[in-house]
Length: 282
Ligand SMILES: [Fe+2]
Image: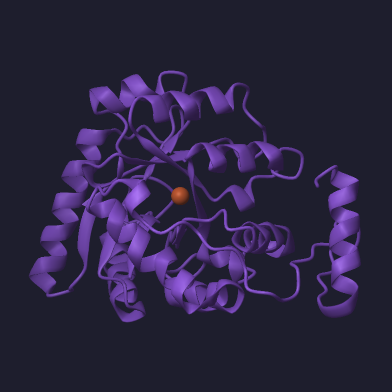
């Protein structure tokens, strides 16, 4: 498997705090069946003052350590690029980083506020020839009121990455609901760990893959963690990669906002309909 989003580089952000943790994470990735991991620390002015050259150097240094220790994990460069008005220009200057120097770019919006002109940013990236990958939309608190925006972006060619832990319940029922719903609707291109350590937010891609397979089947689950991320690393044209497949028949994901209860089976459908109606989502 290939993990395109993790915070394994030591001391650059809220991920691995030191080299010891980075090495533990690398071992955990290998044990889990991951052969290539993209190092994607936050680039967030004012909080995480990282930049492309610095990430390249840190990635090379950690790769050297892993090679010396015989840990068979290949690292590639990338960044958790938080949105900025000059995003395209900063990619061009090398301050922001795409994944492995390809056309594919992780883009992280603010978690708690729907940014104005978000669609303009994504369209400017598409026009510039990039394939933006929206990171973990299922965990954005504003997704409920802006789901149509997410759907429109996906239709326009923006890729969607959800977090393995969301499917596993690690981010609560709300993120669980939206991750399942987006999977079911065939909107998700990539599943990634967004791992930060080995305990609280560990490498867990195989577990996430198994969860996804229950909803969309083994073949689509493989596309989420192998086919498409490998295509990204090879910089293949997105049109040459498989289109996400919606869920096989089965229960709808359910999140009851008022009680926090998650239910399935017979009552699930009516609760899902009520939630969508309440949110004005068709
Ligand atoms: Fe991240």
